[in-house]
Image (cartoon, rainbow, N blue to C red):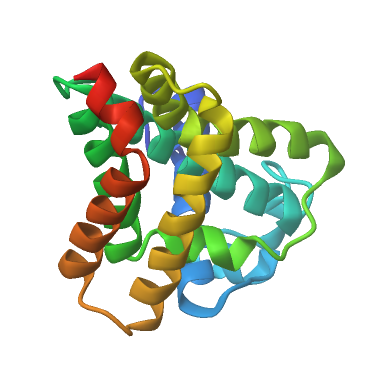
Length: 196
């Protein structure tokens, strides 16, 4: 039986799985894609050992994407939950989304966006995409928006343009975040003012 690095076999499997996910994420950020052999080399395992955890590179990419989206949506929910007013919650959500792009983490999501995910994982990924915008929708519901989903999608459109500008280096990130907040405050002025 091979030696394990953790106290139990289960812990060892979890540590290996986390190492595979970290290696896959690093490879995606460096070049946009990877093979199972490249991930195996990065972690120091054989290619067949990787297949004990994932049946394909697409399955591994799906887990990277799911982990990243879950962490991002949790972070956004946490930052909006502690804000005092609907305006503060809206600002916290915008700042959280755009800070994610400033940190370079959104590039990982963009890189895997072109990969064909396994059918069995698509619903989970879609649900997590919705979870990213959910704190904003909830805030707009609280603010009394007559169509919070529509309004959240409008805000997402502005934020998405800012993400592209930040990632391409065509703007100063903190100024861009301030500009988006000012723009959204103007666009939602009636809704946010009524809820203060």
